[in-house]
Amino acid sequence: MSVDHHPVLFPGVVMRAVIYTRYSSDQQRDASIDDQIRICKERVAAEGWQLVQVYRDAAFSGATTLRPGYQALLEGAREAAFDVVVAEALDRLSRDQEDVAALFKRLQYAGIRLITLGEGEISALHVGLKGTMNALFLKDLADKVRRGLRGRVDAGKSGGGNAYGYTVVRQLDAAGEPIRGDRSINAAEAEVVRGIFREFAVGKSPRAIALALNHEGILGPRGGLWSPSTIYGNRARGTGILNNEAYIGRLIWNRLRYIKDPESGRRRSRANADAAVTMVEVPELRILTDAEWEAVKARQSSLDRDAAARDGLQSSAPAPAKPFWSKQRPRYLFSGLMQCGCCGGGFSKISQDHFGCSTARNKGPTACTNRIGIRRDVLEATVLDGLRNRLMDPELFKAFAGAFTAEWNKQQGASAATQDGLRAERHKITQQMERLVDAIADGTPPSVVNKRLAELEQRQQSLDTKLAETVAPAPRLHPNLAEVYRRKVATLADALGAENGAEAREVVRGLIDAIVLVPEDSRLRVEVRGALAAILALGQGAQNAKSPSASAEALSLQVKLVAGIGFEP
Image 1 (cartoon, helix red, strand yellow):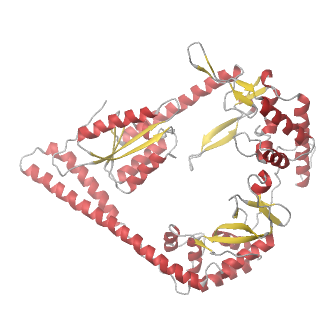
Image 2 (image 1 turned 135 degrees about the vertical axis):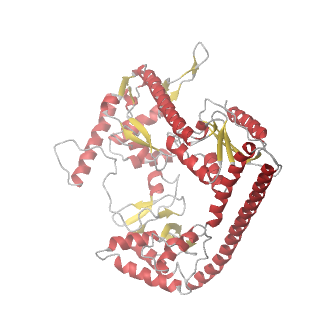
Image 3 (image 1 turned 30 degrees about the horizontal axis):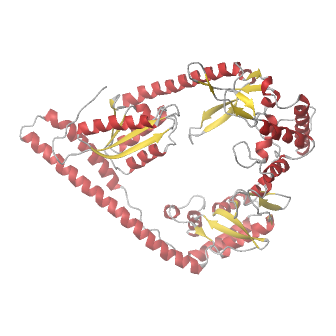
């Protein structure tokens, strides 16, 4: 273990330290974090630092930064809440090279040191070498897991999660270790599977089957409600009840691979080449006869051909595998913005001219009872009228402006307090530096003092950078903003049907956060929730309401404007 001690020379010179801990899998335990905290606390105490916070992430992989403790650590660094981060090892913070480098850059910018018990103080060299080693570790671990799963699948055992219709068999080997991958048929669920195949083969839609199952109180694969997609899935990828080949005694493994999206950090699935897919016969897991399976495949092929014909793709070649509802619908003005006021689900097209709650239609009254629809033209006219005449009512805007000004002043007061705190800390650091210089003058060897002096100078520079950042001035709200906004919305509404209507459509959509449709007396009350930043940007003359001005953007961080009482079509 590499340990570099930096003793405290004077009582007033105290480093604020935080500890970060993590373990990654269910095979580890909470005690792992307790052990990390204990040894990190020992290091903090040995250095004479002040421990101000402990961040922890239990059962989170180091391959992603989407961890609450890690994100809190980054937020603390942005606020300069500490001077040094202590961890057991660099891979506790992240195993991803890019993420390690990004963290190191952020901490360097904030003047914060990063110290691990395994590597000592982290430098750019550590980041490069350890990041590479951690990346190689992840790849090696993934390869080992994949090889182990392949061996399990070759033996006729499951290489992944449990499918509907089966029960996990839990048993131990002679050494007392769990035997993994064994499954047995769940009689009750198997009968549900057979019923789904029979109903679909004779012409029932996945939606009708899902509604019937929910009405009967039969729980879905994850213990929740059934939906059409759970039943139909994706034929090409083998997902969904109707495409699970295990039901005919055929175990399929490695059909998909998962890749981390570098933008979001989330996993995305990709189909593997046919040569990489493993297929093993497991007759003991067969639930369906070949005839039951082939009847469903025949109807799926027929539906695919019908969809291709409607799309003008008639051909002698097999139709491409598509979702059951695959025909592309035109994008309407408010598609994706409508929400059900009962269940919070989305509204979608239910006929040529009407929208309705998707949850109520796909999952039935068990999930949502809102069966009221609304005509597309009526909805669009109602919302545009609301945007023009109700969302920025002059009296409501006047009340909002007063409330906003009070809130802005409160926020500015908090910002000023933060600035005062930074200035006080800088003054304290200046005094500490002066004492160190005096110590050198009094005969203390410079080699003892120089390192601490450099740390204080780095922190002082970081504080100077933060203090130099300009505090945003209070946005100026035009006294006639409501009228200006109303005129511009009217112009946009007129432009929707023009040749350049696509641009106007995007601006109008940008003014809306959500359209909530609430059933009242057999009708739908429409609530329009406005995106304040875009609204103010439009009213204040921005060219594009989807790219708001700085002042409007500041407003949007705190407030959402709502058409208070809503309005009915």
